[in-house]
Amino acid sequence: MSHSLSSLPVGLKPPPRKLPARQKSTADLRALQRMMTNALVRPLTAADGMQSKWTDGRPMAAVAAEFIKPNDRLSSFERLQLYNRMYWFRLIDSVYDDNPGLRGLLGRRKFVRLTEAYLAKYPSRSFSLRNLCSRLEQFIAEEPRWTAPRTALARQVARFEWAQTVAFDGEKRPVLPAADIARVPPTRLRLGLQPYLSLLALDWPVDEYVVAVKKRVALRGEASNAVDHGPRGAALRKVAIPRRQRVYVVVHRYDNQLYYKRLEAPGFRMIAALQAGRTLASSVAAAGPGVTADQVRDWFSSWMGLGWFCRRT
Image (tube, rainbow, N blue to C red):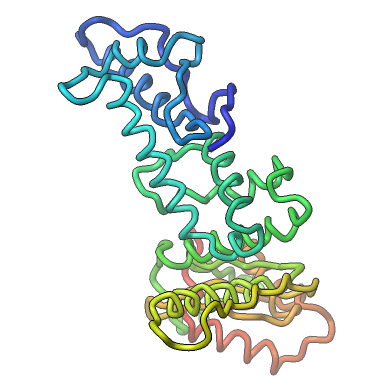
């Protein structure tokens, strides 16, 4: 890790200037927690160690000794460094696993630098690693230097990969029965969409690209486990960067399996209008003047069969 950021991570309260000698109140406990949190999330050095100076310039060894006891094997600094390193290594591994497409696009070294910068600005705020990449696309937009010259594509890959996380374990609400839908006139009917759905209007066929990258990763894993099969030194060809193509994708799940469904532009406009809260009649109109009743019937039947509709909340 090569960068040491002086600015405080977003949403993190600053550490106390000095801790009390003894913990006597909940305020003292909160101060200790803030100190520990700030110590954990500080970026590592280029040698993957804890920084030698605290935020105010004091020696980190002296600061660590204020709230971490040494033992017969490790100093206070060394004990705190273990947790600092574990925090970073675990989170980097999690971002690495959740974003194979972004890794393939940027290359390993550039991806790791992006991850380090992202986590330094937006440290984990949840008990679950599931939410770790929720602001990755936002960060790429805010600091494009980490992904240049492919920032626009990188944002869409990050958006697509986060949509997979949402689809995998996002909330599922009771499916709206067909009889309930039939009772309300189209001019008044408003439908909710399942929270785990993501509607993506993309400028590249990101779905195909990410699938190809995953297949390459799987094949590379199989090749690394093979013994005396195939020519020695044979390398898998890198997945080509996709060409621009406007595509409309719904990332969703069905029977607890993750799926990507391509939609035609009119169908995407219709379901996006439903998601925005427009009536069914207004959403059909949003699909465009060339849409036929048969097309609308087929789309609606497919979406109902996939269980996409629920009550609006």
